[in-house]
Image (cartoon, rainbow, N blue to C red; front, top):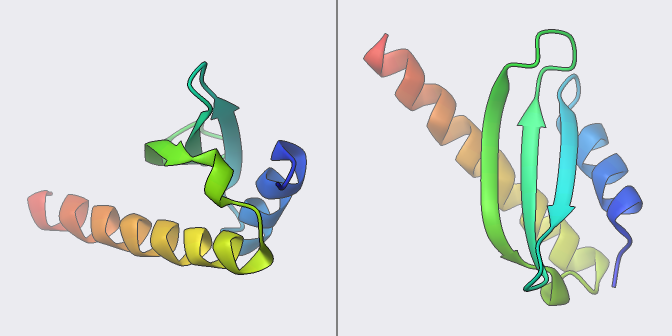
Length: 82
């Protein structure tokens, strides 16, 4: 299983210039928050991710792609409602 600090660094590299916060809850699920480091504006929060499934580089790559899709979807939605 990947360590949270490694996961956070990979996510920050993938979503630069955004910062990332990774937290594990009591039931071993993962919450990922992507936000602007200067303003603190949150772009995406995803909760309930299964930490046990992040055992391989391929699983982490799949998570990054899923987060990228969610981030694009939320950005498009916020632009449509503005």
